[in-house]
Length: 107
Image 1 (cartoon, rainbow, N blue to C red):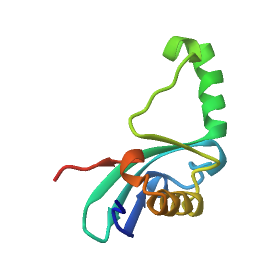
Image 2 (tube, rainbow, N blue to C red; image 1 turned 90 degrees about the horizontal axis):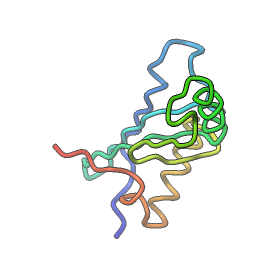
Image 3 (cartoon, rainbow, N blue to C red; image 1 turned 90 degrees about the vertical axis):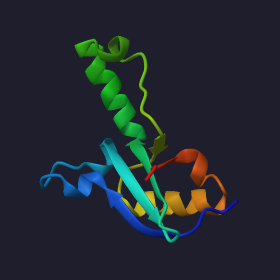
Image 4 (cartoon, one colour; image 1 turned 135 degrees about the vertical axis):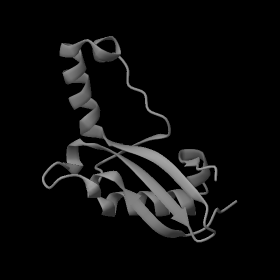
């Protein structure tokens, strides 16, 4: 069941202060509005950022000193740039996986 086409993509990092976003090593929240006006959310994390968090948490003790990571509706990606996220979302739509990877926003 194809859920539609993308009308609007909001990426949290595009609203951060300048130079705060490092797409190759970051984690961002996204909200996708489809043409049918349904909204979907997810968290996108770069593969490198998983390593960054593991190292940080091994020192701070968080998440059993970096032994686990969890986030609701987490999608791992090569980076968190708009172009990568757009391509990823299109692929999820084409492969009929979109509704499994993102969570619907209840209105």
